[in-house]
Image (cartoon, rainbow, N blue to C red; front, side, top):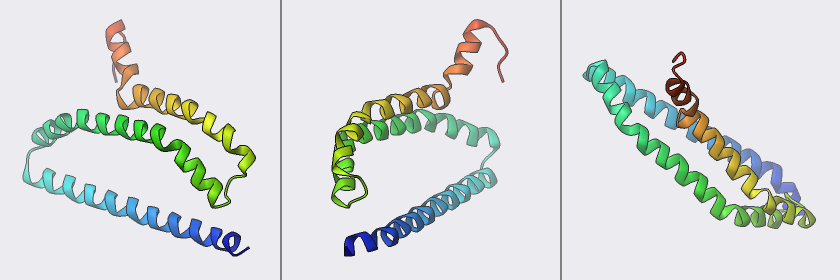
Length: 127
């Protein structure tokens, strides 16, 4: 019974912690971009961003692969902490590939800008 009482507190702790982490990362990135824009010309900053795009895409694909690899362990942790019923475990493990495929589709369409590349190849308007 004590485990059930601590779950909302644990969820709140993770939510607050991850929210603070995202705010801190956003602030650090904003300061870095501000510093770069102040110190360098906008064309130099644009070149740096173009240089980092493949690295960011590779990082996103690596994270999607990592999610696919550790998905069963995450489901086991959810079952262990009582957040998921043991009868739902097989269904959740089976959902792994559906989630991974959707993340890859989103990455191709948005992250790799597949729609814009397709429109360029077709000779259509490019935004």
